[in-house]
Length: 264
Image 1 (spheres, rainbow, N blue to C red):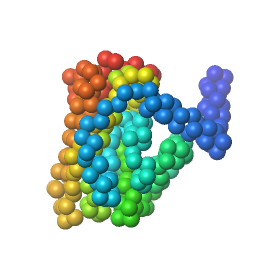
Image 2 (image 1 turned 60 degrees about the horizontal axis):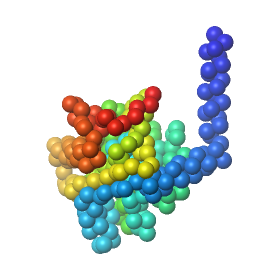
Image 3 (image 1 turned 90 degrees about the vertical axis):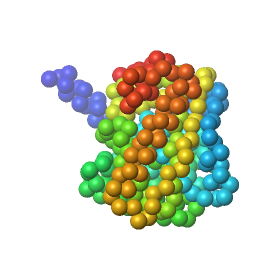
């Protein structure tokens, strides 16, 4: 009982510490420094970088989509003189992530989506307001970055929010995946969050734009959702192959591979 009480007090104390603005700021700056170190010391190869460059050249916005757990290094591959706003949760570690994005030169929109089939939870998390804000941003010169899958999972199942945003804004979804040959995988997280390690090689792989018709019915929206999901999974397999990582038999777990050090 005493041990349980001590653990509860410790967890409560840790949560209180993490709510401190000074602590959140220090953590965000530390993580930003680490991301810059990885970017500086790794040899990154980009595939199909001409796809986003065409949009940047024409000052056209788009929706940058990736999976949870794969996006730590991605801000370093954005053209910072163009506006990119990242969807960040209002809860949990969202404040640290928001400060991190600002440290890396990106903007944020606060709110969360909801898993497929649970749209009512979107309102509770500020998702409806966030969706409206993202559509406005896309129409006013800012691209949007967000993850297609949502906590608590299952991982690598695209939600309807990203497709709805593309339909309402008229802007395309560009899938993107990044990985490094050596990395840590946090096995105790729902998304198996990956931390790229410095001094190795990595890849960034862009996919073709996915457009959602404004008059899309439910069947067409579902088809587009599956297209986003399939594209991101295919890019994940492609990125893994580019760094020489052997895939497992299950395509849904194809990034948990031989040169990965798993923690937790």
